Amino acid sequence: MRLNKKIIITVMIVLIIGLFSSVAYFTLYDKKEVAHLSYNEFVGKMNKGKIKTVYLVDAPKIQGILKDSTSFETDNPRTENFKEMLLVNNVQVDENKGNLMVTNIISFVGFIIVLGATGIFLSRQSSKQTSREFSKMSNMEAIDQGDIKINFANVAGNEEAKISIMDLVDFLKNPEKYAKYGARIPRGVMLYGPPGTGKTLLAKALAGEANVPFFAVSGSDFVQIYAGLGAGRIRSLFKKAREKGKSVIFIDEIDALGKKRDGFNGSDETDRTLNALLTEMSGFNENDGIIVVAATNRLDTLDDALLRPGRFDRQIEIGLPDVNARQQILKLYSKTKPLAKDIDLKKLAHETVYFSGAKLENLLNESAILAAKDNTEFIDLKHIDKAYYTVIAGEEKKDRSTISQKDREITAYHEAGHALVTKVIAPLNKVSKVTIIPSTKGAGGFSMNIPPDKMYRTKKDMIHSVKIALAGRVAEELIFGEENITTGASNDIEKATQTIVSMIKQFGMNKKIGMLNYDILHGHSQGSVDDEIVNECRRIMEELYKETKTILAENRELLGCIAKQLLIRESLNEEDIDKLINKSIKEAL
Image (tube, rainbow, N blue to C red; front, top):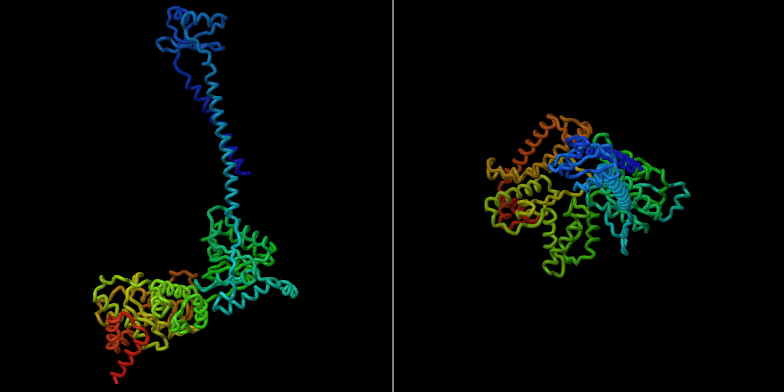
């Protein structure tokens, strides 16, 4: 309505301006220089045949044109035979000239009116179309999971999270049991943890186990440029859910719309959308039987209003699976795959530390693809090993003709340095594979260092990880000289720096800096590193570099032995490295 009023006022202003403009235009346009003739002069010229045209109008003055194209004006005699007299003297008579200006004005005004009416019509049609599009874009439908619904049998690992989710299934199936005790159904469940750990899968399993409709959306679906569209989608989503009765709403990547509001980085549209979600979940509307499940990788970035009781009542961490959970996940995903009998899933579970559920599924899927390419009856160990390399580092580079022997030697000593230091300072870590085969992702090779499954990382563990990361660069310097170190250690230096900074800034593991969390002091600003922290990080890095150099210098012969085997065989597993180390020990004795 407000839009229509604006359009009408605009059209009226255009009409008024057009009317005055046309009057002024035609008035000024017609004010040409004319000769003023007396009636007798006019009659004399007419008798001499010098009059070409007379514009005959009902006015005190009449105008005309002489044969020499001069315009003239004279008195109107208003006699009955005046027109006849003109025609007898071969004078052209034009009786429309007087109405020409009025006619033009009327035509112009009519054009403006038609134009305005067309504008109003189109604006109304556009408004209706916009309304229809807005309604269409705001509409959210439940996702049909098909005949095969996902339930908890399809989810391996995450046992603690599954137990918490099972409570909600019981709520949805037997609400009267909880109503008897005055308990209300939790309105929201926040699942948080690293990517690929199964947050979406758990939400689907909740809906499938309870046999209720499942609405799946992403936080980015509500971040729109149209004012009010995000809030409209929120209301539409909950309206559809209420129509279905009991249901599960899943909002993935909720941090896209629910980030902390600090008054600086937000926007009015984002605030409107978030407020709409908060209102729907706060209890102003009855949503009994509706559970909102949200997922995020960063719980600390969410607005406090989202996490208060009454909205997302439960916050469940979905972490990376431990060794037993990894074995269960591998068993689940291998059910439909013809694995060879010699494949030990328990051993594979031990070798896949820090793998998420999605990464484990990808590992087995890549193995299946490789087996299909080879047309083998079963997926065997070579397919698993090759897939493992692909998941970790990327596809093997097929054409290695451009790689010089010198570069191969540098890579061999670099990777041998990582493997050897791992074996010396962290014997509980597994070095499952060392290779100098380059990958399509740009890696010249890699050394897979697998730490044991532990709940916590000690300060000693973190120091060891820094030394292992620095060992590649140290090996290059030790063998080829300081002037010939390469860029191959860039990723290692990045990891080592991150570990040292975390020890100092987050975990309070440095006596000089103190037991403080500097991220809190600096308001979570990633760039807030003062000179004292920088100097301490540099000191620790230099100290650990020297210690690593000492370790490799003491084992230089063994380092060369591992590097030479890598140059010959390109890849070594843990058994190969252990044999080389044991052989070196025996020779030393």
